[in-house]
Length: 338
Image 1 (cartoon, rainbow, N blue to C red):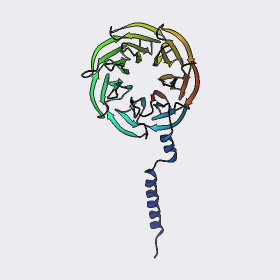
Image 2 (image 1 turned 180 degrees about the vertical axis):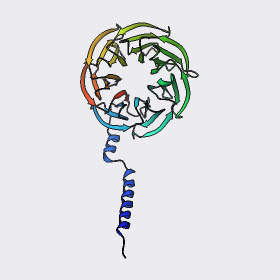
Image 3 (image 1 turned 60 degrees about the vertical axis):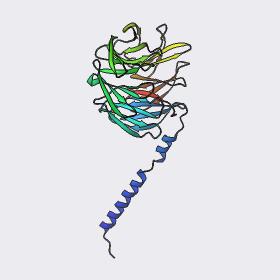
Image 4 (image 1 turned 90 degrees about the horizontal axis):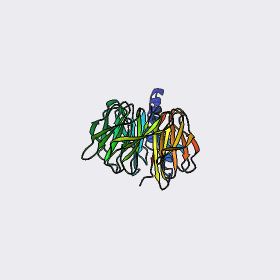
């Protein structure tokens, strides 16, 4: 029987397509290695805004060993309290993404109605709060239900969001208003007060007492100390140029503020009790995000260098610098899944 070359070619093409489909159903060896690598000290995740990826760093070895594709312009990333998921805000889309920490696959997304910036969970991981900078609002998301519950109007161009450790309040920085909004969270989120800070309040951290907040004033080169109960700023601490994100370490030896100064490319360590500078640590160009680990390290994104600087908290020295994706912004420590 005579068979044309055209028929043979079509048959070969079908076989190749079928083979390709079969291969795609199984993870590659490199994918499997990323998914199964032991990370006993947890992982650091960086949102690489210009690359549309999240980089994965093993804390034990300070090695960037994998990347996860995201939506458009991932801005910040945060892990659930139990370590089973991580959520990513998207500056270029109207949704937040949900990823499984074990498989590193996207398992859901939630439409929050607008471009989104920062995001934070409440202490038990049941609610997620997302700043909608272009809409002057904060979105409240039901985490188990994967749905938007509420949108609350705050000040102009909100960015940083943090829940008080007692879970009762949310503090939001309003960058164009030079204020923070304080929201009560029960029975639903509602603005309770508005407090003046410095110029362009960018990010906020809150002490364990749930009363003292520290706010970075990006254009004020300072950190505002805010008494949430009294509803006022009580002091200003000098920082480096353009302070962005802050990490607060509270321990037996006192409280320390680690401030990433974007304009001066360095991290300032400040004694929160005395409000005095302890030391200045050179990092990289565009020093921006901060994340502490229980193992005693501080990770800092350098947005213009496409790197992460690792600092040992005890010695206050740089341990290493890790290349990541383009324009790394927010980052988080992801606990080993429980």
